Length: 403
Image 1: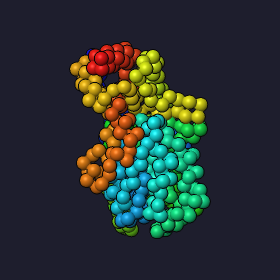
Image 2: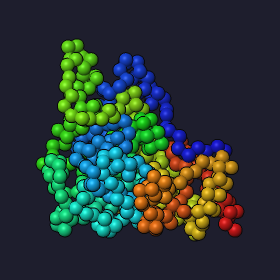
Image 3: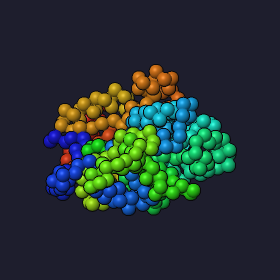
Image 4: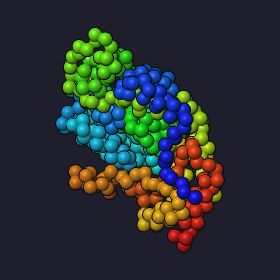
């Protein structure tokens, strides 16, 4: 067998939607983007959604909108992809890395310890699609003790009156906590629509707004839309209408709008997302059923009464195993035609961040997780026969390498 790690889901409906966009003569931001924004707003139960060209650019835009400046701090988990921290850096602030818990989400007590008067935002990461403990996070940042530490230094910070919680929801479209979507639990959640995500536009992202009063989310959406188009008051679609050429530049924005031809891919997938999510759940649960008998297999977060994951990753941890043995197991699987992955190398281990002074010794759980983690293939097209083949070779490989 040949089992890739995460191929995109492209069916005839996707091809038809993209072809419709191509045949329309309009392929940049226009009606397909508007339809996708509306669809995501309804699915995520967000107050407003603005589609952009990546998770990273969407997060940079929101942090700039918040008014970050040099010397400001944003708390992030150390166990995530580098984009979480680099978006903070691109918004002129410093990422403050804290360790995770054993369920791979940010440690709320570590957040508490890291907060200073320079803290302007927190970016929890729903790694693999497992929701963070947002109720505890929101309770923390709304507490009298923490609000008294907050120093507002921009108009939007003043209006918010506390640290902003911006969820890195790159993995968690469809996940819920206490019957609420992530977009309902935080100020802002940013989705990734990258090629390997549950819902893809090839490249893309979506900013889901849930800002509290006195913010008007409709007005904030309009502001962000302008800022995502170089600060221009009219998008290209509007300008093409007869006599509507005149525009103005009213802010120093970014060029990060999503094209219609990309939105078309995600739009077709969104219409059947419940089906796609159900198929990912099938794969996830079959892995768990087959692996639960092995003492060395630490299964990823399972659904509970108050929590459902989005089944984006099957992040298996293996104990006992060394980092070298884990790597040999990955190669063993590759030799059998099975592509696996590791999510992630903790950021303090990466050269860029090591050179900035971050130390992996300060993040013991992140490091212990990394040494033992192996992500198994998970996507709707994966058959039960292929799942069984993956597990069979994983088990055989483990015993061959460790005994």
